[in-house]
Figure 1 (cartoon, rainbow, N blue to C red):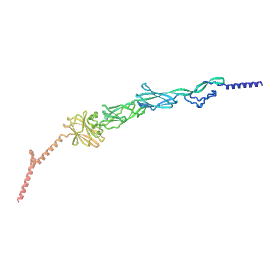
Figure 2 (cartoon, rainbow, N blue to C red):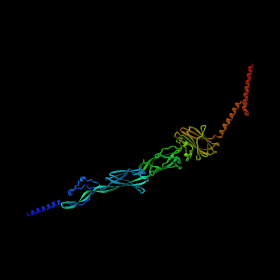
Figure 3 (cartoon, rainbow, N blue to C red):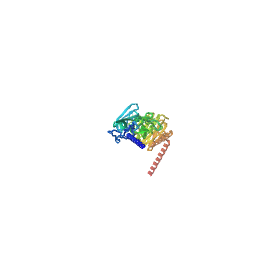
Figure 4 (spheres, rainbow, N blue to C red):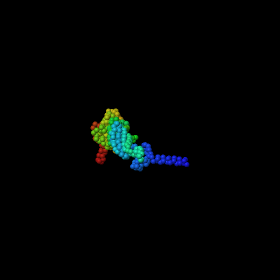
Length: 471
């Protein structure tokens, strides 16, 4: 019996102790809740006048996420840069800075945003790398650990519990772009088909509406070529498409060339080979420029060179006369170095004759080329030497589909004597008959004998006639 009472007493004591522990307040331990933890469970060990409803708590991150981007990775000087800033926190104060290539730092903008913000900024006037820095700052409510006094009856103690507190968060973002200078160049050379330079050739950049002139060695350069905003990024370099064409006086037109012009690198070796109208292989007209035709206004009109015949004379000889058929013509004659050039505008089909004068055995070269209604005739040339004392004669045959240039050889001495003698004798005979044999000073026995015989026959015929009448 005593044993049973003892067991019941032990059970009662244990029950009282257990009940006491359940009625006594729990001692809370301090803890830090990270921003990613779930909403903590609020126990009943709170003051009666406090109440926390987890469903009303705004859960926010305890850090700031910033990003900065531009619409392109490369720009030209002075071009507008579009900048976009994104933030993960409401009411974020943002400052955007630009570090230029020369070490100068510029503030682009200060603003407050709750999401995405765009701004524009003109690219600097100097080329180089630009480093953007985006600095952000915001106030957020984050879970933290708070401490309070909890009292039950007369017993009080400190207790920690999870709570929301305001805190400042910051963030940074970085981005780099490259700024290229607009100024660049296009260069090359203009030569003829014999690889001789064509000084004075005009070269055009059609899209940029610029023009320049080739130097004495045929080189040209657009040294102040400016890239427009209408470019493409090729290998992260602004590149424009340009059409370059070249033309020269008395040269066959040539289609323009499409070239890619890169920022700062430009375009080099944009070369042209022009076919010259009046530039046969045997004659060097490298000095053929507009200045050659000073005083001739028509030379600067392209229509003039679409219907023109050029006859070039090279050598220590002088042109004496130029004829079209039997009619002497006087087209403009120009001196180009030691060469002479006849330019016949609006030529006609037919025969042209050129007479040269110079010392006997002097060598020369004559060439001709023409365009008729924009159709280009291949140049023809001929070389020779002055054979006659009074000069040399050449014939140029211009036909619808070809040209022919020949030297007219002077006739031999025998060919000159025979026609002269025949003509002289024939003339004397005719004069004798026309004068009835009374041409004084003319003594031709055979002719006189024949004449006398004819007179005697005539007298006999008259005598016979008289005798018949008497009978």
